Image 1 (cartoon, rainbow, N blue to C red):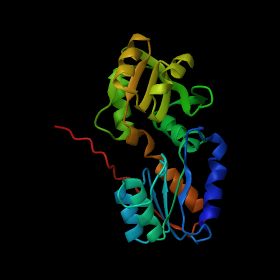
Image 2: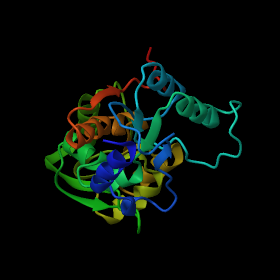
Image 3: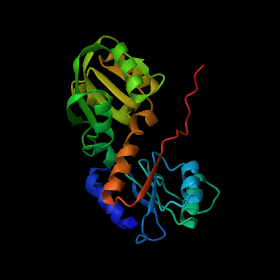
Image 4: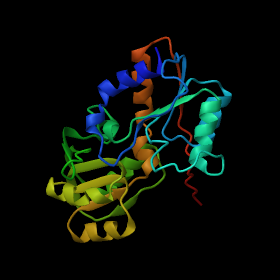
Length: 256
């Protein structure tokens, strides 16, 4: 299977039509679209470390959720981080591709995985018009939000979350990654609680006063599970491909 063929296969699961208009995922670089893919490294981000590993360990493809090319590249020199990573990948003959907001929106993608992890049923989509990436569903029974926050820590394997709000909750809206712009949509969808990777301090303050509880659980923690879905898609595309998953976070949470 070639780089182009694998991209088309995963695109059938997460089509470009599902992407936000501002997004820039897809194939970021490839010395040849016809190059055979035998080894794939899957990660959430194309960091300096994952790029270095992909090159040094002779992977053919670095497959990520977040795009490497998100903002415009104005020069292709090793001075700045994104051009430096592009040069390293091309020199090492490693292609790079990503599936971002379309993988958030896709059935069975980021937010369906998150909703399932957090015990939601009767799940449907929600979000601002044109960006219905989030998911909203119900818990088996109403529960105190502080108790549910502890459950979130257990399910996402994290030491802590940020919580704003009190009381019982049953309808829960979730969004992996950045969610500050989705609070109003969660309220409109009837959520008692909105959980996202990051919401923002002032939006968290306002939410509690607007009658919706908010949990900020971390960008990485709410999305990293999708790496296993991407690996699964690669293996379905071609069982002969060797796939490795790198889920080591770059941003560390340090506790006392």
